[in-house]
Image (cartoon, rainbow, N blue to C red):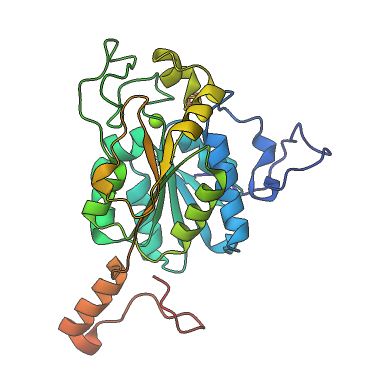
Amino acid sequence: MEASAKTTKQSKFAGKAHHLATPLLRTERMPHIWCPGCGIGTSVNCFVAAIEKAKIPTDKLAVVSGIGCTGRVAGYTRLDSFHTTHGRAIPFATGLALANPELTVVVYSGDGDLSAIGGNHLIHAARRNVNLTVICVNNFIYGMTGGQVAPTTPETARASTAPYGSYEPAFNLPKLVETCGAVYVARWTTAHVRQLARAMGEAIQKKGFSFVEVVSPCPTLYARLNRLGDGLDMMKFFRDNSEIRNQAPTSELDIALQGKIVVGKFVDREAPTYLQKMNAHLSNVLGERFNRWGEPTASGEEPY
Ligand code: SF4
Ligand code: MG
């Protein structure tokens, strides 16, 4: 769990001109741990821009991360942020969202954390339509732990534990979460910063389980093992090989090694959230003996 923003440690940037994002970043913790050319920082910049543009009240916004390179995001955001155990960001966030329905809860983690050890939690939170936003930075590999093959590694791509290339089928994450019940699903790369920030803002404001996949370069491991150049080379590849297809069927979103990457907003639909279903069902069964959980806000809107 991260401490409050108060700290005695001074930022090496203190007194220098500030980037627009700094009010929402714990600059006293900079420099960050991410490698040069890594896309995670770009995704965080989009996240901060999304919060500011959508004017999301930061005193009601919580960020939950798991373990891994992306799992460090919670530690760098000046929000109520929680760095949880491996694969358990979603159940932790589910508890937050259910206990305090007025909170806006964002899970921010990597493909390894969310779709491997945390895969079970991912599918069930989507199935239940828990009011959460999941931002999944997909760099096709386990970054922090040494470049092992992940459920998202494209077939034939090399990883430290697949030196002759992976022969496992890879997850198509948008298809997975749509099939389970997610009400909002988008994918952008770190070369699409405006679209990515817009998608993050929409996802955060959507009631129910929303999912944004961020295709991101890991130059240190994935690119090096597959001889794809540096972070800039990967960004150029994303720019030149992405195809924007909003509303594309998620069955068409597989990503092959150095293949075309379909990006866009694929799902935006309405469905009752977990708490709405719980309140409706238990009110129906128990009548006045049941106290609905989560009071409507001053504007009359239910918070979940
Ligand atoms: Fe980014 Fe890869 Fe470095 Fe992790 S190992 S910080 S994912 S470039
Ligand atoms: Mg990863």
